[in-house]
Image 1 (cartoon, rainbow, N blue to C red):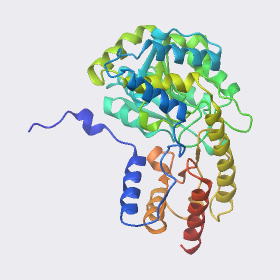
Image 2 (image 1 turned 30 degrees about the horizontal axis):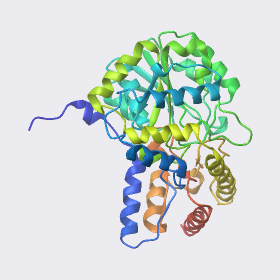
Image 3 (image 1 turned 45 degrees about the vertical axis):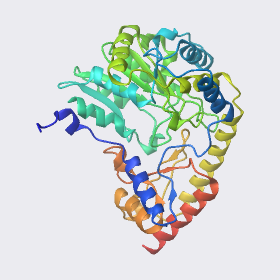
Length: 390
């Protein structure tokens, strides 16, 4: 057999799934494992959403849909964008995808390639760098610094953009840090990008509703000056606890819509029909379950920060968004991935080492509080006991 294309050799992966697999294997052996590694709400999908999918199946939603998604689903997304940002968007600019990753894949594939540079947040979602490298482009990490609340710094971004920069990736609220870039800094960021009209932007806003302490999410979609080169990524997975439904959406500039539609035709054809009906129910239906979930995340967030800061050698900034804390463990003397591995194997706690999220992740671990308060307390008791005796 001939060797595979270098594209696949350069491609990385998301280590949270490797940690999940190991945690699952240990649990199958009878070990008591508490998983604070995976970024997945522990809540069930709200019942009215499930019922909408069941009803769609019973009524015959069994076939292909348009590659860019059902018109009704795209119209529902358009209504949500207008409600969230005050901005009108045509359903024709919206792409329904099997989760959020295909939008990243498409945007990075479009603007990557040898000779290109792509700026991405670091620590950040690992698929950004993985896909950048897979295309042969040069990844340019934009540091997300604890002292800055893990927010984007517009001045640092400005210093990284060169004549080879083709795409800038922004993620707020951020994974893995929980950082939220405040509106004033977003406006400065927009000013930087306005000075570089040839640079495209991918704004990953999958955690847009998950903000705390009165902080507001600011969508880049609100800034008309960027619209002709802006891709906005969002979806159902986090807000409505629908990770396994594989349902996302993205908004594309008109010149790119046909290109991403053709990618869908070549790659995934279309998104599950019944799931798209569920997505409409999620957007248009009652939001009580979402509010309950967000209140629970907020309570867990405050508990996690307090407990982590009480552990000797650990300091944790208060995250303003998403459902992750990103504590600094450098004073414990442990390397991040060594500590994460030891906690899983010896203490039965799954966390993710900071370097899995980028070159600036050393000295940190990611703690997901998308688990019950009881499980979080058990896990942090184990972390504290482990660090005390080690």
